[in-house]
Length: 222
Image (spheres, rainbow, N blue to C red):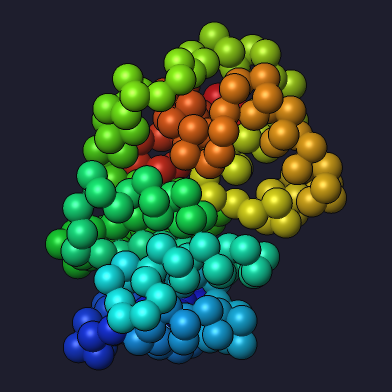
């Protein structure tokens, strides 16, 4: 059973999402929040597997709330569900640590798949993610290409893929059966070899090299 916390400042939206999710039988909505502050508190007390996060809310917005939840080192992974366009909000959400991004216009057809992907430890991104990231290349320092994958050890490659997909050090450590500190070392070495500054750069590298699929499925063995 996947435990979900719904975060949206509109009660009608939360009710619709709850109905959609609970209809499948293997998703349990354990709580709801109408603000970023409430989301952070309930993520700690309710211990959901997935936080479905709106972006535009009064007070602490969804990006700030996502950053706080990720910084707390909780097991919960954040799936952003918003009416806002990816062009403006995808990269800030990923930088904050979101594991997935989905537009509300596609919720009726894609939300369950996104929840399942994120629950399995994968990222879930819109089809346009790779092109959105690539469009910013000209304004940034040149980045490594596919051939640079060979510069990584197997453990470094797995760690950077998990990092790119939104996993915390603790989550990656559980996947790799090592300590979080060891994972942080792998990620730091991989970022240094590949000249990556943060999660956004890592995600772009993983997309361009095929380590992460364009719809968000990670492929550590690629």
